[in-house]
Image (cartoon, rainbow, N blue to C red):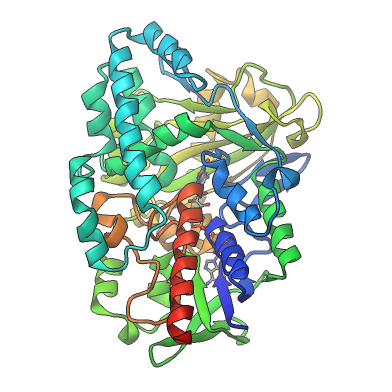
Length: 495
Ligand SMILES: Cc1cc2nc3c(=O)[nH]c(=O)nc-3n(C[C@H](O)[C@H](O)[C@H](O)COP(=O)(O)OP(=O)(O)OC[C@H]3O[C@@H](n4cnc5c(N)ncnc54)[C@H](O)[C@@H]3O)c2cc1C
């Protein structure tokens, strides 16, 4: 039986392990942390539970497919509950906008803010659908490691003007600033500024409209657990607390991996699920890398960093939605500070997660569990997080105390935080970036790190830094590409 070693257990690694297992390979998954899930770690801190990363499930069918590979039903293992609203936007003047549910409901909300934008919104949804039909349905699970595959797609991508940014497109259809912000902010969920991210990511809007937004009951951590159980039932072997330091090659063939302890694991196929910027810097000797890969590694622009503050409260904030986007006064200027000027500004915009709005198991009765996320510059900005973290925490708690979470200062419990330093040391993410390389047009499809490492016969990449990109739908789609490429390689070997 051919064997595969998968390095890293984010959703890309888990989905690759399952797909390769379903192809009949003997699969060994290696993860450096104590538990699997990658950025979807699950913390139990004092009496509170917290998902560390992804919480918004936008393409539930991608998870269903993983269970269906083995004739099982996802719904038997974990419940996905549709949320309403999907997100609540809170503006600096205290106004809010509830987004989600039927298109009529969204139009009613838009009418309240700017009736003239109703027609534009419908045109925006149509545009997003057209991008979705190409970008998601046709390209997300296709390999892009040959330039010819890119050339073939250029007319379609050009007709949809994917060279424009998400902001450019939203700006074309909507006039009111509040609505432009609400409908352009999604690229931050995959690591890009709306002003720079290719409008291919405008498809997220249609993905939400078509399938809704769901929450995994028990948290994303429970979803990881359900997938872990599926892997174990199917005979995938899982090794945690094990860091791969090197990929071992014989000529142009990867023949296994070496762990930091010196232990070696042989395999016919190697799949890497960490940050490609890390792998191409630290795990393969430079002379083995083709010039094209080194160039990409040395010139790629990274996504932003993330500051995540976790806490509980000894009271409940019943009026706070499950997902809230709390917008500060500055929009483009703040994003420029984060992405271009790379400074830690005094102000911020926040994403606030209150799982207890849907699932009481995250906190004791009468309490809430929260995480608050602020996009910040990555480590390239040389911010001293040991000094800055307590100050940023204080500013955020102060701002929420004065607005969304009255008297938070008196009710906050058991706070702790993650900064870009933690993303670098925990996940080996280059410069602590939240989502590997940024979702720019010049870093998409063929221009992104390839799912098949160039120059090697049997080394594959899955996860946020590879095609199609970050976010759970992206990385799970990248595993489909990897499975297809491994299958091709096995057929070629057998022929
Ligand atoms: C705070 C936050 C919120 C987010 N919210 C959402 C959301 O709501 N919806 C959504 O769809 N997406 C969201 N995302 C994005 C999404 O979580 C990620 O893009 C996706 O989970 C990344 O998966 P991945 O397959 O790239 O692997 P990762 O999650 O990056 O995991 C890679 C794993 O590989 C391991 N590893 C790396 N190198 C080695 C090595 N050498 N040896 C052994 N192990 C190694 C790491 O420890 C890590 O566990 C969010 C991300 C963050 C950080």
